[in-house]
Image (cartoon, rainbow over the protein chains, first blue to last red):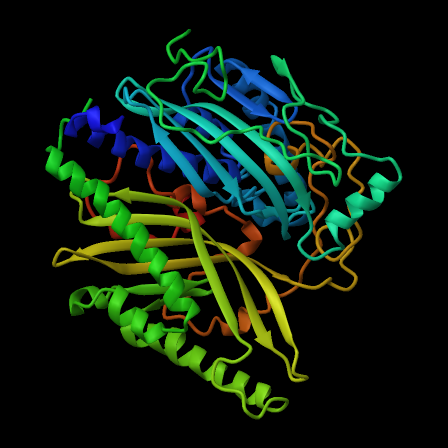
Length: 250
Length: 282
């Protein structure tokens, strides 16, 4: 397919692939710093077809994503910062968000495909699991293992690449060195306590989940996020959010 | 669609330069794992005297500046440690050789590369996750998971990319064994009681959105980092303070869309670019 493209088109797509990798990494660090506003303001498409999905469901449209991911999240960071300041006044000169919960979503094993028409890019990534975050007791960093997979769509819009769709699929959140998480799940299964889909208190979403379920010992392999294959254009067959593929729908 | 500033040939060069930078930093992981530290300095770092005067390698305590100070810390200091480790291992294994029972593996990933407008300077950011193993006196070994992020400046010397600055911000060392008395479900304590409204005001695991099934459990205080003793005495004592987590990172991230035009030491990952919190209101 790519052989049909001109040199300039292939160059555009190669640059696009590299830039979308960069955007994906940018998301990881901004998210880790809890710079939610900067993330969605800086790298995301703002249309009604922008979507963000997790196991609990899919947020649809930039406004809903912004409300759930910025308006609902920022207050927690500031409350944590205020609590930390009670313990140490030096906190007053520190950044309320980035000194807080640093969710380090490491990215690896990227599969990245740019559409033949050069107007979109799709990727899947795995995270190998190392996960760092500050504790809410403040001043203490901790690490756990978070296993997830990510499906992302990007669009080339008004001369730049933008994040368009994201689907996060958590498979498990466990300790580095405490117990045997798989065996614990087995023991729970023996008691009839299987992993339940959904979240205890999910944010508002347009498409309710569950879209993915955490690991269980009796669970079949979940093929929630097929990796992208070479494709011609963003459409319902090549999208992590079928039916919502117009980056200029406002 | 194409960029108006650069020719196609220049765009290809810029595309490829970023891949070379990624490749060069990846090579460093292997050099470090092999303990080829002097070889790393010789082959991957800047060689011109005027650039070497500015080269720096930092840890959480500060910056080692110039080839002599970097060598004393990064090459000779570690060689000394390895020798003492060998003597330890020989107590239970007299046939042990230099490097036995030691593992030092770091991986760089989630990479960002900002290539300056003039194409002569690259700013690099990656997570650094790895594991280290230290031999013990009784013949056993102690293992750790390590976590941090790494920032680097690379410049072109006669058309070849070389490392100018590396800033190793070490966030966490996690013993690969339960931590006695470290309760609370972080690591070493009992499993988290994960049914609830989550951490007060915090997002669920990973910080994605509000609510969530309990959010992250409290993390236990791990105490002093076991590798702090290796930090040595830097040339310029400007620390990365783990206590403040990623407080400095917003000022240091490479740019995603608009690169800086040319090298600027005040935003570099050398000591002149240290993100002093007080600078903003001085």
